[in-house]
Length: 318
View 1 (tube, rainbow, N blue to C red):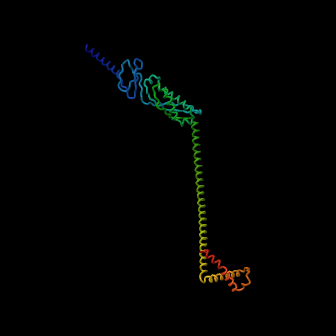
View 2: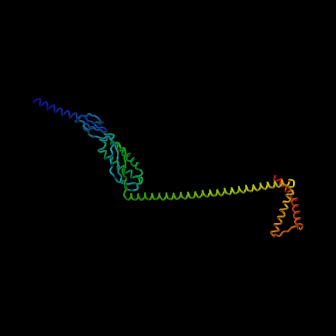
C-alpha cells in the first residue's frame, strides 16, 4: 500500500515537473519575437532561440513575425484635382521593427496602417489632375510611404514601400482618353506625312538647283573654251601673218626679190581690175590706163612707191 502511494506520488511529481519544464522553456523560431508579460505587465521580448521563463507568473502575450509582410489595401474611389473619380487599389509592404510598440502602441497595427494608407492616398491623389496620376505613380507611392512611416513609428512598424496596382477612371473618361490617343496618333501620322512631302520637295528642289548649277558651269566652261580657242586661233593667224610678212620682207631684200614682188603685184593688180570689169560695176579709171601696158606700168610704179613701207613691215616683223 505504501509502495503504491509512493508510485502515484512519483508519477504526479514527474507530471508536474514535465509541465513545469514545458512552461519554463520557450523556443522562439527565427525571424520571430515574442512579448512576455509578468503578472500582466510587460516584462521582456524573447529573441529567436531557447528562452526560459517562470511558469504561471510569466506568459507569452504576443507573437510577432519580423518578416516583410505584404498587405493588400482595399480599392477606393478618389477625387482628383479636376473633379474626376478614380478607383485606386494598391499593396503595402511593412515590417515589425519594435515588438513592444507593436503590442501596446495600437490595438491592431494592420488595420491602422491600412486606414492610414487609404486616407493618405486620397489626399495625394486629390492634389493631382487625372493625367498626372498616371504619370506620377512613383511620387504617389513615395508620398504614401512617407506619411505612413511618420505615424507608424509609435506602432513599432516600418513601412517599406507602397505600390499602386491599378488606376481605373470611369468608362466615359476611358472612352474620351482613347479618342484623344487616337486623335494624337492621327495627328502624328499627318505631321509625319507632311514632313515626308516637305523633304521630298526639298530634295527635288535641291536636285534641280544642282542640275542648273552644273548646266551653267558647263555652259560657262564651254564659253571659256570657245573664247580660248578663238584667242588661240587669232594668235595663230597673227603669228602666221607676222611670219609671212617677215618672209616677204626677207624675199624683197634678197637679190632679184624686188622684181618678183613687182611682178606678183602687177598680176594681182591686173586680176583685180579684170574682175571688176567682169562684174559690170561702174568704174572710173585714169585716162592713161586705157591699155594693158599702161596698167602694168602703173602697177610697177605703185610697187616701187610702196617699197619703203614693205621694208618697214619687214623690220616690224623682225
